[in-house]
Image 1: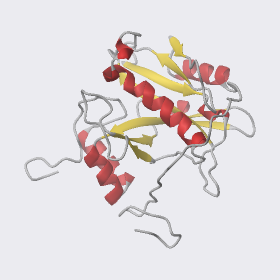
Image 2: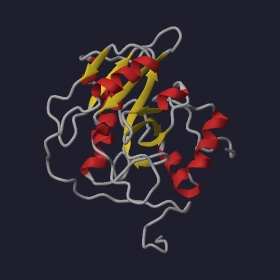
Image 3: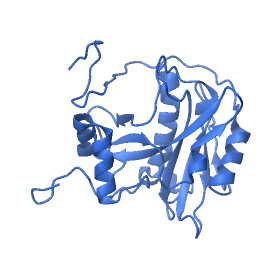
Length: 241
């Protein structure tokens, strides 16, 4: 339904945007904050074991930094750099203009090249890169609580899961100091986490808003760790939620 601004909105009142064609190919301007982001990652998450570098880039050069699991932090972290090379066109919205993304994986997630030939292991990397480039190709912005389905209609990310969408949220599994990185007086980079969603969870968010979804997450003990077979917090069980 449209609101008084002519925007299509969900039942919760949040705008729903549809995107058609991306902007044409543009050469990246360079990896402007690569060293600062790498230093920030190592200061708060641990040593960067490797970086998945893009060979061919469009508009922004997106790299993915990998931090392996340890006894103290039993997660694999994937963190982008390059998304924040360009400011997002946020308009009059009082939201961050510079963003990078984080994916938190179980410590035994396979990261070798052979495994990445299988979408069951590669899809979080693909999703990071797609979302990191999205606002620059479609002249829009991403921020807290923004969600996106995997296609229309949504399709599962991989054969071993029915997760088929994603919402951007602050990570609850990283140190609080990791959330922002001050580059200079004019530029502050914010880090948001990818939280994949089931179809029912996306529907719940559209009907009742992000806070209602977060209440379900809290009740069921769901955090930002990507588990292809995690509990579906919006599915009815025995007639009750």
